[in-house]
Length: 460
Image (tube, rainbow, N blue to C red; front, top):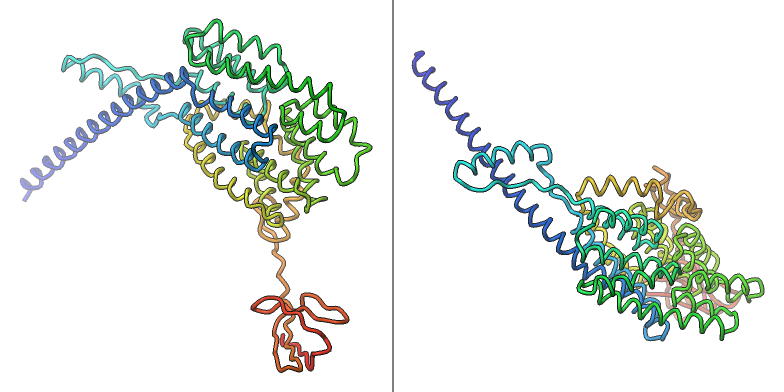
């Protein structure tokens, strides 16, 4: 009776040991594959940082879009969709640049030792567990700031990346190119020009050099046109709008400050829109959002109301903490019913998907630190979010204000109206005057002259 039990016990122990060894080998093999994949990923990141073709296209695209707007080749709604599409592409690029695959972060070091021990037995060379490149992290956050028009924050991080990137010439040229772009957009034209010329002359064999030539031409062309508009055009809304399109935000605000006191009420939405766009370009998104919301609240029938709401949505879509701002735009669009807005939300889903792919703990930690010091969107300063609370609280349970009591919708009063001709109409009264009744029926509105009504009864 006891001998078989001891035999089974030995077999069970051997089985468990075998399973353990197989599990260990499978784990080591998976870690080995993981390390090899990470090697390829980091090599691709390095190549991507050297080429930076997508990022460079994004810089040129902004000038191209603004030039086409200035020349009336496209409409503002086209420009808004292009901007959202470009941001989706750039976000995917940034996510791939900073993504990490550190599933075995704590087991990596001892596992590499074991793997290299086995590899030495079979006379194979050792492998290395590569760590994440901090330059990728700095650049990823810098691109995030740049997309959000927070150029001061972007420049600060480009400087940090440049300190780390001392030997990779193509990558250095790409960073300097972005520094030039940020300075150009903020009006520091001489600094931008020096940066572009530096890339062209000192890094002429790099991909960034060709882009710098294009950006320098745009910079000089836009600057020449800005100076012409300032000198030749009298101060007017049209002049401010031209300067806005030419990315001359401060100059546009100067013109508006000279004309807005004497402007006609009909020009108010247009003036406010230009002011909001200019502030948005100068990293003052909170003020811009409040101005845009005032346009929507005070002039909902104006064509600038839908344009303003798209800018609110773009501000929320690009910021990591922009969910509440996007909700505000969504609430606005219930009454505005802008079809372009719906296209933008579809594109934003791709943007969100790309950003959620980023699993790099170092990137997330550094971004959190930077956002604490210098947020691209400070929600506490956006006064218009109070409008969102009121709007959502009145209709549904809000994620912002917590559980709210939803007001019951009062059903309309239904009437049965019979006319002299024998026709019978059933529905709610939409409008009534001394001469007629407009009834909202199942098949549409029916206009009934009162002189033909023989009976009118309330059904419910």
